[in-house]
Amino acid sequence: MTWPLRRAGAFALVGALAFAAPLLGPAAAAPFVVVAALAAFVVEDGPVFELFARPGDHEERTLYGLAGFSLAAAGLALFVPLFGMPVFVFAASVLVLSGGNLAEAAARQRSDAAITATLAFVVGGALAGVLAQFVVGLVAPAPPPALAVFFAASAALLGALVRLALFVRDDPLVLFSMGLLLWLLAALEPTTSPVGIALALAVTAGFGALAYALDTASITGMLTGVLAGLLMVVLGGFGWFALLIVFFGGGGLAGKFRYERKRKRGLAEGNDGARGSANVLANSAVALGAVLAHAASPMVSMDGSLFAFVFAGSLAGAMADTLSSELGGLFDTPRLITTLETVPPGTDGGVTWQGVLAGSLGAVLIAVLALPFLAVPPAGALAIAVAGVAGMVVDSLLGALFENRRVDELFAGALAGLAFADRRIGNQTVNFLATLAAALLCAALAVLAGLASL
Image (spheres, rainbow, N blue to C red):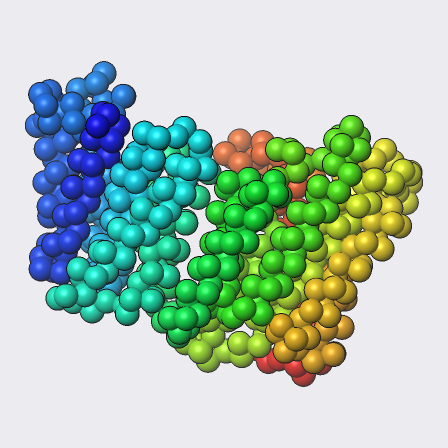
């Protein structure tokens, strides 16, 4: 057994202190506070230090990694008595992280492939999370087995994504991200049957594996897509997921279409066209928010059908923009949408008639599929198509007016000196705002047509 695996096993033993949370009640944070104090102020050398030490700990002779992990767990534990977080949420979050890290360390003994380590974290973390909920359920309220699997898998996917997108050893951020997600899902109280959850896991994992195998998504893009798909199936239904897959599949294939020509023209996505988490989130964040709002609508006495139009409108806008950009960029003589002057291919805000046609057809495709998948009436499909085309236009306008400009430039230097003032508005920001505009327009059209209510 190598040192990284022994260290991960030791961290997992510390994480197992969360099993005592139901018995300790309001004092569930106490064991982790004690461990953090020992790590920060007492253990400076010896076999225990060497067992838990990360590379940077040796210089300061302080177990910063262990202290950070323990303090994060203690902080999350305080949410139980102070804010009513279910104790199984706390225990599952801690065990998903520590169990996932242990499984990843074990996988790295056999392979250095990033995908192998990531899958090991997800599977190992999910199993540990299910175990935590089972143990908690012996003495305290906990979800039934099928929901426990859904909660643990969702947390493991988010944890793996946060670790890859940010910093692999940022345990506090990973732990709190998973805890807040599980808390939200527990509050929504999904009613999907065990068979439905099993199918959701199988289908979303299958599509994620296919997207990665076809190089249409990076590892982070795959994780984001699988997590979003899983939430949409369980909280919305397979119809919502089907529309999401149409967008992901259509966008991914469009990105691969004549990739070498786009690469030579400087228009291709990086990573051989595989879409990363930033791109996936920029185009699907509004849709994901819509499905969460749809699931929560009974709790706030709102019309859930309104969020179906928000969802479909955002995807229609995302599909229209993606096809317009990926296919329209193959043609010469684009024109700037604001002035109609001819500009070089790849210019922000440049459009071609071929791209506009492709994008419009993409919006219509989402609208037509919404008829059976979301059970919208023909008038609703028309609203979705119109909103999708409008979202494509908004994306081009934002690209022409704001993309790649500094934030303080847009406000005539009034924001100079602020931390974000020198940031440039990127393509992901533009994509997000365009999908948001399409979603809001679709919802407004649905309300005006009497298809949904506020």
